[in-house]
Image (cartoon, rainbow, N blue to C red; front, side, top):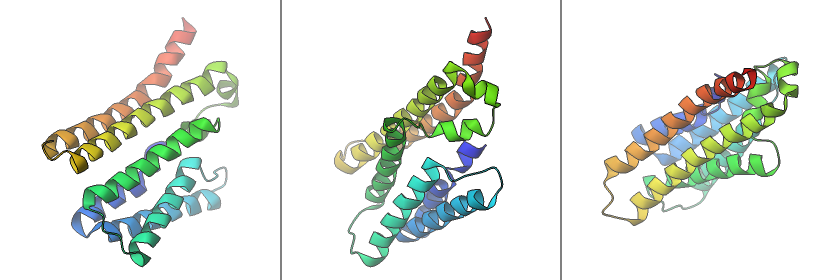
Length: 183
């Protein structure tokens, strides 16, 4: 559940962007991101996560640019910036040797499970699945932005399928690894 809650700023952004506008969506995304970090700071046994810190940085930077700059981006252009930033956070977490799912997984498993060699590898695989999903989202948005003949519904379908696939994979893969290890 924690990992899905970490995507709340993106969901809030998408909803507000749709109904009130991109600038408003970016500000709400920034506020939700900051609230998640505050929750982790104030809750015993929790700490801010790479994804949450990266998300807050991303939304705050984009919101400041939207409010104080003079952006001329389209709705798809804003979403492309947000999703490219998310992909960069995920890939960056892997590059520094701390896949973003690792922090959430540590809160849900015992120290004994964390010590197993497959624990880190499992988190790299799951983080990689999320990276693929976000890359699909970025590709779909690029197609919408630069290829006028791409049907909007096809791009939306690709985005939804990528996200659903990542969520389902995240739930399935740890059980698969456990079953494989016990055989």
